[in-house]
Length: 207
Image (cartoon, rainbow, N blue to C red; front, side, top):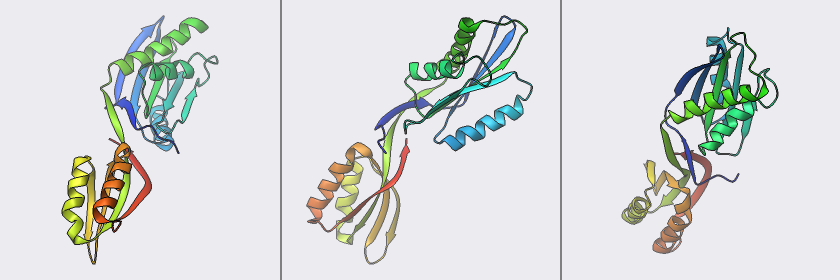
Protein backbone atom coordinates (compact mmCIF):
# COMPACT_ATOMS: atom_id res chain seq x y z
CA UNK A 1 0.00 0.00 0.00
CA UNK A 2 1.42 3.38 -1.01
CA UNK A 3 0.83 5.91 1.73
CA UNK A 4 1.37 9.66 1.67
CA UNK A 5 4.19 10.78 3.99
CA UNK A 6 2.36 13.93 5.08
CA UNK A 7 -1.34 14.77 5.07
CA UNK A 8 -3.61 17.63 6.06
CA UNK A 9 -6.73 16.79 8.05
CA UNK A 10 -9.12 18.34 10.56
CA UNK A 11 -8.45 18.39 14.27
CA UNK A 12 -11.90 18.36 15.88
CA UNK A 13 -15.51 17.56 14.92
CA UNK A 14 -17.15 20.67 13.48
CA UNK A 15 -20.67 21.76 12.58
CA UNK A 16 -22.25 24.53 10.50
CA UNK A 17 -25.80 25.41 9.50
CA UNK A 18 -27.46 27.60 6.88
CA UNK A 19 -30.78 28.00 5.07
CA UNK A 20 -31.48 28.12 1.35
CA UNK A 21 -35.08 28.85 0.21
CA UNK A 22 -36.52 27.26 3.31
CA UNK A 23 -34.32 24.15 3.31
CA UNK A 24 -31.98 23.78 6.26
CA UNK A 25 -28.50 22.32 5.65
CA UNK A 26 -26.54 21.06 8.65
CA UNK A 27 -22.92 20.27 7.86
CA UNK A 28 -20.79 18.05 10.10
CA UNK A 29 -17.11 17.16 9.67
CA UNK A 30 -15.12 14.44 11.43
CA UNK A 31 -11.55 13.18 11.52
CA UNK A 32 -11.60 9.44 10.67
CA UNK A 33 -9.06 6.69 10.02
CA UNK A 34 -11.16 3.87 8.53
CA UNK A 35 -14.27 3.17 6.48
CA UNK A 36 -15.75 1.35 9.47
CA UNK A 37 -15.39 4.49 11.56
CA UNK A 38 -17.20 6.51 8.89
CA UNK A 39 -20.04 3.98 8.72
CA UNK A 40 -20.41 4.10 12.50
CA UNK A 41 -20.65 7.90 12.52
CA UNK A 42 -23.12 7.85 9.62
CA UNK A 43 -25.35 5.39 11.51
CA UNK A 44 -25.37 7.65 14.57
CA UNK A 45 -26.18 10.73 12.47
CA UNK A 46 -29.06 8.98 10.72
CA UNK A 47 -30.47 7.92 14.07
CA UNK A 48 -30.10 11.38 15.61
CA UNK A 49 -31.49 13.23 12.58
CA UNK A 50 -34.01 10.53 11.68
CA UNK A 51 -36.54 13.11 10.48
CA UNK A 52 -34.18 14.75 7.95
CA UNK A 53 -34.93 14.45 4.24
CA UNK A 54 -31.39 13.48 3.19
CA UNK A 55 -28.07 12.50 4.82
CA UNK A 56 -25.51 13.06 2.05
CA UNK A 57 -21.81 12.50 2.65
CA UNK A 58 -18.30 12.09 1.33
CA UNK A 59 -15.02 10.95 2.81
CA UNK A 60 -11.43 10.61 1.72
CA UNK A 61 -8.81 8.45 3.47
CA UNK A 62 -5.02 8.65 3.37
CA UNK A 63 -5.05 5.17 1.78
CA UNK A 64 -6.67 6.70 -1.32
CA UNK A 65 -10.15 5.33 -0.57
CA UNK A 66 -12.92 7.75 -1.53
CA UNK A 67 -16.65 7.29 -1.05
CA UNK A 68 -19.65 9.59 -1.44
CA UNK A 69 -23.44 9.39 -1.55
CA UNK A 70 -26.28 11.58 -2.85
CA UNK A 71 -28.75 9.72 -0.60
CA UNK A 72 -31.66 10.21 -2.98
CA UNK A 73 -30.75 13.67 -4.28
CA UNK A 74 -30.26 14.07 -8.06
CA UNK A 75 -27.02 12.40 -9.17
CA UNK A 76 -23.98 14.63 -8.79
CA UNK A 77 -25.66 17.33 -6.71
CA UNK A 78 -24.63 16.26 -3.22
CA UNK A 79 -21.96 13.63 -2.49
CA UNK A 80 -19.61 14.69 -5.25
CA UNK A 81 -20.00 18.35 -4.33
CA UNK A 82 -19.14 17.55 -0.71
CA UNK A 83 -16.07 15.66 -1.92
CA UNK A 84 -15.12 18.70 -4.02
CA UNK A 85 -15.05 20.78 -0.84
CA UNK A 86 -12.84 18.21 0.93
CA UNK A 87 -10.43 18.27 -2.00
CA UNK A 88 -10.54 22.08 -2.18
CA UNK A 89 -8.90 22.16 1.26
CA UNK A 90 -6.57 19.26 0.36
CA UNK A 91 -7.78 17.11 3.24
CA UNK A 92 -7.45 13.39 3.96
CA UNK A 93 -8.89 11.16 6.72
CA UNK A 94 -11.87 13.49 6.62
CA UNK A 95 -15.59 12.68 6.66
CA UNK A 96 -18.27 15.29 5.91
CA UNK A 97 -22.03 14.81 6.18
CA UNK A 98 -24.59 17.35 4.95
CA UNK A 99 -28.02 16.85 6.52
CA UNK A 100 -30.93 18.44 4.66
CA UNK A 101 -34.37 19.32 5.94
CA UNK A 102 -36.47 20.08 2.87
CA UNK A 103 -38.24 23.42 3.16
CA UNK A 104 -40.93 22.96 0.52
CA UNK A 105 -39.23 24.75 -2.37
CA UNK A 106 -37.22 22.79 -4.94
CA UNK A 107 -33.84 24.36 -5.58
CA UNK A 108 -33.05 22.96 -9.04
CA UNK A 109 -29.97 20.94 -9.90
CA UNK A 110 -27.49 23.84 -10.09
CA UNK A 111 -28.50 25.67 -6.90
CA UNK A 112 -28.86 22.35 -5.05
CA UNK A 113 -25.29 21.34 -5.90
CA UNK A 114 -24.08 24.77 -4.84
CA UNK A 115 -25.93 24.47 -1.52
CA UNK A 116 -24.33 21.12 -0.69
CA UNK A 117 -20.90 22.43 -1.62
CA UNK A 118 -21.48 25.51 0.52
CA UNK A 119 -22.56 23.38 3.48
CA UNK A 120 -19.38 21.30 3.29
CA UNK A 121 -17.19 24.34 2.56
CA UNK A 122 -18.47 26.33 5.55
CA UNK A 123 -18.06 23.34 7.85
CA UNK A 124 -14.48 22.64 6.77
CA UNK A 125 -13.54 26.32 6.75
CA UNK A 126 -14.40 26.54 10.44
CA UNK A 127 -12.56 23.32 11.31
CA UNK A 128 -9.10 23.46 12.84
CA UNK A 129 -6.82 21.99 10.16
CA UNK A 130 -3.58 20.26 11.06
CA UNK A 131 -0.71 18.59 9.21
CA UNK A 132 0.25 15.05 10.19
CA UNK A 133 3.22 12.86 9.29
CA UNK A 134 3.19 9.15 8.55
CA UNK A 135 4.82 7.04 11.27
CA UNK A 136 5.53 3.33 10.80
CA UNK A 137 6.02 0.83 13.62
CA UNK A 138 9.56 -0.54 13.82
CA UNK A 139 10.81 -3.31 16.13
CA UNK A 140 14.45 -3.45 17.20
CA UNK A 141 16.42 -6.26 18.84
CA UNK A 142 19.82 -5.20 20.15
CA UNK A 143 22.56 -5.78 22.73
CA UNK A 144 22.65 -3.69 25.92
CA UNK A 145 25.85 -1.90 24.91
CA UNK A 146 24.03 -0.49 21.89
CA UNK A 147 21.29 1.19 23.97
CA UNK A 148 22.80 4.66 24.21
CA UNK A 149 23.66 4.73 20.50
CA UNK A 150 20.19 3.50 19.60
CA UNK A 151 18.45 6.12 21.76
CA UNK A 152 20.58 8.88 20.26
CA UNK A 153 19.80 7.83 16.67
CA UNK A 154 16.07 7.48 17.39
CA UNK A 155 15.96 10.80 19.23
CA UNK A 156 17.73 12.64 16.40
CA UNK A 157 15.06 11.33 14.00
CA UNK A 158 12.22 12.22 16.40
CA UNK A 159 11.15 8.58 16.67
CA UNK A 160 8.80 7.70 19.52
CA UNK A 161 9.64 4.69 21.68
CA UNK A 162 6.50 2.76 22.64
CA UNK A 163 7.95 0.02 24.84
CA UNK A 164 11.20 -1.67 25.79
CA UNK A 165 11.63 -5.27 26.97
CA UNK A 166 14.85 -6.12 28.78
CA UNK A 167 15.77 -9.80 28.48
CA UNK A 168 18.88 -11.44 27.07
CA UNK A 169 18.70 -8.64 24.54
CA UNK A 170 16.75 -5.40 24.47
CA UNK A 171 13.60 -5.44 22.35
CA UNK A 172 12.07 -2.11 21.43
CA UNK A 173 8.96 -1.04 19.55
CA UNK A 174 8.77 2.50 18.26
CA UNK A 175 7.01 4.78 15.81
CA UNK A 176 9.42 6.05 13.16
CA UNK A 177 8.69 8.86 10.73
CA UNK A 178 8.42 7.07 7.38
CA UNK A 179 10.87 9.41 5.65
CA UNK A 180 13.53 8.60 8.29
CA UNK A 181 13.31 4.79 8.22
CA UNK A 182 16.07 4.19 5.66
CA UNK A 183 18.37 6.66 7.44
CA UNK A 184 17.81 5.01 10.83
CA UNK A 185 18.34 1.52 9.43
CA UNK A 186 21.62 2.63 7.80
CA UNK A 187 22.95 4.33 10.94
CA UNK A 188 22.00 1.46 13.27
CA UNK A 189 23.47 -1.15 10.92
CA UNK A 190 26.73 0.77 10.57
CA UNK A 191 27.23 1.54 14.27
CA UNK A 192 26.39 -2.03 15.35
CA UNK A 193 28.23 -3.68 12.44
CA UNK A 194 24.99 -5.36 11.46
CA UNK A 195 24.18 -6.72 14.94
CA UNK A 196 20.91 -4.83 15.40
CA UNK A 197 17.82 -6.65 14.11
CA UNK A 198 15.43 -4.21 12.47
CA UNK A 199 11.87 -5.18 11.53
CA UNK A 200 9.59 -2.68 9.78
CA UNK A 201 6.00 -3.70 10.51
CA UNK A 202 2.84 -3.22 8.48
CA UNK A 203 1.41 -0.85 11.08
CA UNK A 204 1.19 2.92 10.75
CA UNK A 205 -0.37 6.05 12.20
CA UNK A 206 -0.56 9.71 11.24
CA UNK A 207 0.33 12.17 13.95
